[in-house]
Image 1 (cartoon, rainbow, N blue to C red):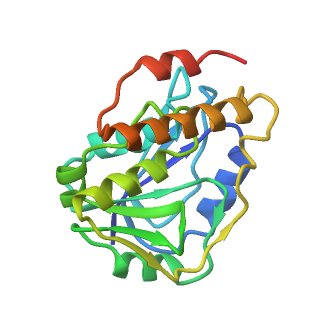
Image 2 (cartoon, rainbow, N blue to C red):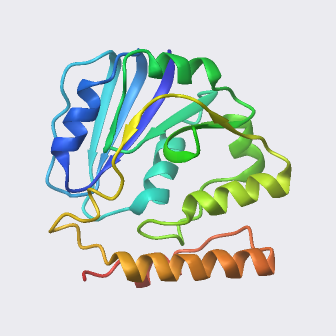
Amino acid sequence: MIPVAVVPTLTRHDLLSRMLDSWDAPVGHLLVIDNSGRGVSVPEGPWEKVTVLTLPSNLGVSGSWNLGIRLFPEVLWWMFCSDDVVWPAGSLEQLEGLSGKSWVTLCETSWAAFTVGAEVVDKIGLFDERFYPAYFEDDDYRWRCEQAGVEVRHESVRREHRPAQTLNTPGARFDRSRSEAANKALLNKKRAEGDLGWSWDRRRVLGGRW
């Protein structure tokens, strides 16, 4: 069983429903983080418990992932999934079997669906919320894992992914070019300085309405 599955969503709740309809593996607790503030419904599925958090503002990708970890600190590993993924039959069971407490497991090379072990978080820490609202938070975490000698495994787990569908939706209040350029600059600066920390400053600056 997947202990906890964390799914952030923003504007494309239709994609969320499609992704959840394709889910065929048992989950202890499904956490849907609704960053739109409008509310979202979750269909029946193979989850023992469901929590939907409707937030007053967009936490961003790394903030949403961190919230899932903070709310369920007792599990051995967490799964994270974008709402624009579709799961072929049996893929989630395969991912479950490849996941564990001591490493990061990616579906191929993508962070659209991945798992992180509790021992990794103990050693590396949470995702850096300065990367807001999206882009390069995954590259930063991979780099921090490399610095600490933590294994990031690329596994041939099938899934369909059509990226950036949410970001290109009207109403997302997401300036892709601004976010991508600013976050890439931050990543380069962190690597140059060996900076492994994070703060709220960029979250506040980049969190304005476009």
